[in-house]
Image (cartoon, rainbow, N blue to C red; front, side, top):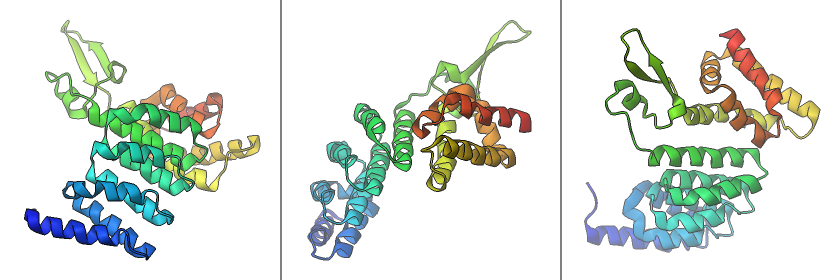
Amino acid sequence: MALKPDNLQLVIEAFSKRLKHSDAQMRKQAAESFGKMGNESIIAIPGLLKALEDSDEYVRMSAAEALGKIGSETAIPGLLKALEDSNKDVRRKAAEALGNIGSETAIPLLCQALEAENDLAVQFSIMDAIVLINNLTSETPMSENTQGSKYNIVQPQNVQIIEQGDGIIHKYATPQNLAEAAQEIQQLISQLAQNYPTNTEIEKQTFVAQVDAEIKKNSRLRSILITGGIELIKILCPPLGIPIEMGKKWLETANLSD
């Protein structure tokens, strides 16, 4: 049950006051508290947007996360600006927040930020945000088909069209669409990228080998790669600076090991 308007106003005022506190930890806690309240904190958005410019990076991170949880499109301009923050974790949180808000209006500048971003982990977060926005804004066609509605498939390339012996054209959704597959495997790659840089040719080969080893022992990864196929490889490789031909090794391993 939500607070009564008068009490909610008291809470907002109390938290807003602490969002301007001299102690950074207090400002951080205030931002987090607004986030936990969700869209009831919508009137606190101006203060949280100002907190995106706080001198403390942890306050900026918490403010970005809170804005994502509140979910209002009015925060989009400030979060897009935060994608240029000097701290990579702030940029990552801003991308995640934009994904949670789910507005397609952010897509052009998210793509622009993706091209300008040098940090792999931030690139992955931006890509995840784009995928999430796509999923949130997609409609659900194929209502006459139980498989299609189950998987919420909207892209024709993600549906198998099969004519069976009864002379009827049947539509079957693939087990997992490409966007979801990319999002899941990016999480693994993001973790490995923190330990295995890809600046030199030797480093790239080492990284490919590490991912390859994970694929061999993880049936879930193999399933994702087989589902996504070469189109998934084309999504994964460019942000890493890895040639697609080199990334094809992952797909070969998935098919051979399965």
